[in-house]
Length: 93
Length: 401
Image (cartoon, rainbow over all chains, first blue to last red):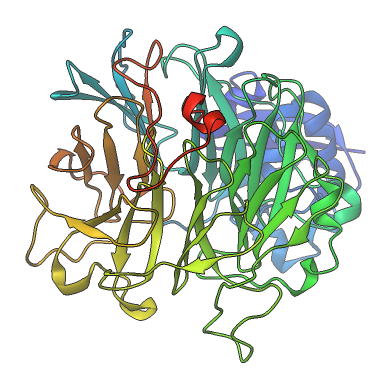
């Protein structure tokens, strides 16, 4: 288990009790951290992931400055005191 | 994000539910809809392809399907005309785990029959039908359609593979028609346990076999207000009617500048009367000759006449999409449509004359019209001109909201 701080965009804060930052104990990877986040704030799950448990295509998850899509996805390991950022992708029209 | 402007309404108002690519708007028309006030945007930034009003069982409930590019699609309701909306914790329309699918868009919300006030239907992309039997509290995938052996061979059109039309039969609880782009028309006569393709007579110009059992790109189907087994259908090339509940279809593209188009609406009272907005070719998809014309038939498709008064007749390169044309229940009927350029036009005289009632909106994809507090000024259904009705039909009232 590692201490993880998850940063949320403002638009998701209402689904996390108004918080834009949640610190929790989770591990060993990004998927486990998100699962722990969803236990605390169930309203975040379907906004960040689809029915298949995949991160939505226009949502990015970073560990530090690295996009987990460039690493091992939800299996990306988390170092202790990891900073995890959930951000909307640059997309729209 | 822009602050949403609230709207106050009262009985007798006409309420337009306008879904756009960047949120939903409500337009309130007062005093025979001579003046309009706009509320919104609601869900700014989210595409709203589906809206509905449910006044069954004493409700005054707005429905909207909002799709955020980032955060997914969800069904929301408002019981105070948009002042507040539900914000479901979990996605309330979702494909079950065993399907392997993920919801991309909610395309249609359809309250069920008045006799079944807790029943609603929802059409989505990828093409599937969902049903609620508890007033929208929970939604179940209609397995009778989902498990159809044709489904793997349906293919997406420009808007995706979507189920966009849901027509419950008003009196026969077993019968329901849906339409899919591209898949065609499917009917159930056993309450949804099984569905079968019902596209006899409908062309598929984009396939080697021009009359396949299924695979047509049906854009919209509407039901006659008096004869529920009479239907009109706007196809991807082709304009049709059915007089046997959708079992077979006859070409009625008589006098239209193009039989391509998306939008279609039935008159709320007059049998045999329907509206379309023809578009020029599936490549250009704008109104022909730069003239914005609504076409109306009053004789069940034997002829169509242009309605142009008040609409731009030069340099109007407009497109009206499949759910962006609607009628209300007034007498004479209000007719409304929205364009991809963000304009909303309305007529309060059955389409004889038109006025632009909203401008500079995001691209309009959905328009629904409601007369609040009942069918103010509505009247008994009228038979199609030149046709005689049986006794049962003469007694009938318009059943469409």
